[in-house]
Image (cartoon, rainbow, N blue to C red; front, side, top):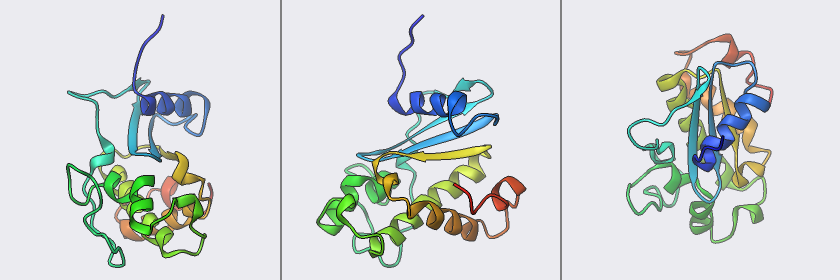
Length: 170
């Protein structure tokens, strides 16, 4: 049998069954690249909803140092994809993300947006794991920055050992 689904749901399924999500009941996979998309795998199934969930279009608070606080989405001001996808980074900084040095302020701002995404996901869905992939996530310095900022933004409200005890691993 063959089924057709979205690329991000296929990635979520792969992570759940064969990758970083093995052993957890609920996993959310985000790809941060040309766009931002998310897939939810829960209790052995992918979530589809009324229409395909558009996790990349959640609305975020702009970072105080962001020179373009409304982002670049043609549909929503301040949405995750318009703030954090690769094309948003390139438009904001005038060069592809891969050409920005690790110490560039872009990564602090990017980590803020990805941490807000993680916090929103944690408080809405309470997944056993959040997996981040895609081209932008090739910037290895982002992982610890996102983890630290996620914990700060949670402010102790969600203090499950699975979150707090594993903040230094990736």
